Image (cartoon, rainbow, N blue to C red):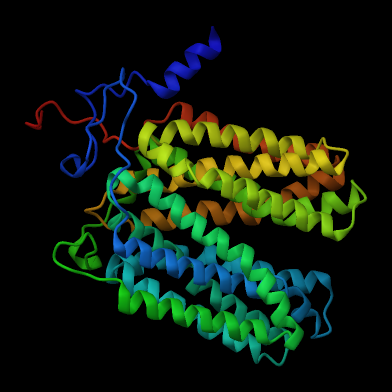
Length: 443
């Protein structure tokens, strides 16, 4: 009886009554949302705009380039006669600068608009990456890599803003899924190509990454159109969404928590702790850690083929609840596995859950901001939550693993994700507008 009631509340929440909530940009919808008793919330047949396809190409090039340097960066750092800890700092400085510079990136986007900040961010990362290739000392490498974090958060936040402004509201989930898929494909192919390029020297992948970023910037600069009928506007033409308004929205608060937990589990712990568990607990070789990351990506890719469309059809909240629950349970299970087959299976299921929640989460933030406003600061804080989770998560989980064991470490990580799911239980469905005042004159 309890689980039937829960499903009813998730898919037919009573607070989505038609007289209280309205879909964003209802005049652009190809099908009207149903009330609490209906099944469909949005339509999914609208074609993906050309500008979105340009963004997908750029995302693929960026992820491909990042994948080129990811496998060789720690090795390159050790060529300056430093140990493993100093090499790890080279990796973490990028994320740290992203976190610190995120508010400034959001302010720049609100002032100058999404496209200029996006292109500038790409050029900054291209320049810093090329400089890394010519670094003559560890400290030079550290500074150059850190500067790249500032550019990275600029184009990341601006990309989210562009997707919100360019994607039709009824297709935001599908667009977010397609964008994530383009990034995933590039991330998978990048390390393969990077490994081949490393045979010509550890500095070569950095130059290749810089080149890929320059191509991505050129694609966006020349192919992303801005016409009078386009949703893309200059930042100064669009009012900025106040942070106070965003924080007053239960959906945005839930999105911040789920972004933090997602960064903790799927960006931080997956990359830092899962490989150690495979080697130290399962006594498997380093190759097993790579396979765990590969099957996670496979599960993620499988979910991305349909999760965005479901988020457009049934709403963001159901997909977020299911995705967070699956990810949380699968992540907690990893710490209980004692053999490689179950370890790989749990990793694949965790990836599948992440693929269910990510398109809905990004689309939900887009719904909260809307197409007619700039979301620079709001998006920056959302991105900061993810980066903070990716930085804090591995450190705390590492302490738990050392003190109490990996079972507790992965259990705590899964618990954080499940708490984020609980947060969404009491939040509103972001695909529908907040309550319309009775004296607004609107039906």
